[in-house]
Length: 248
Image (cartoon, rainbow, N blue to C red):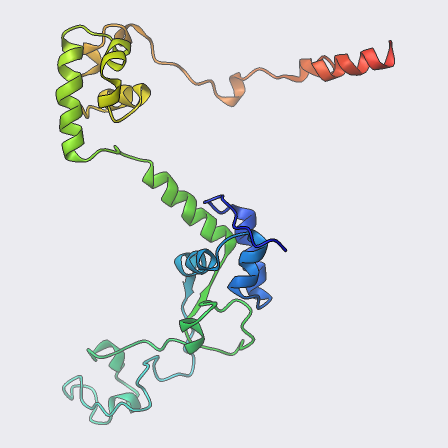
């Protein structure tokens, strides 16, 4: 198999489904990366970033402290509830009073694959981590959507853009003329600049754009108003070519 690394930066849902299935089959990050044509570190970051915690039941366990076996703390609750070692107490939950409480973490989660996918210990009552393709893809899409919100300018760039564009617009220059003369000094596209003005980011407003205030807002038709395209069935250009082939 070729060792060429895939140039695509973003993983798809299909890639994540393959990762989930491969983890359940005890495949290594290297094997997964070779199929997806990614770097093994990319697979490792994907799994660790999007793994989800499933709290254990801890049924029948005194507590989930990592130092339970060696702990000799007593009367952490100042003797209000018990006088015995805290880990032996039946009336006091020492995890709520001890400042040194550290939850137990399975040693298998500290090394690849960092998740419990494919683990054969079904009786484990500790906290677990799982990689789920749909949850990972949903989290990624939300993150990508959030990164595209707001303005992609620093306060200094915003002030510089406002100082350049606003006086020109107020003097009556059109947006096309501004970009023709100062396009190299404007750190965004013309469409983005219109959006900045519409959002109130710059000192000029929509009322300062003579042509824009003349346009009515576009109304988006709902599904009930959309025309059916059933009428084009059998009337497309491929249908025409097929007809010519059958009737030369």
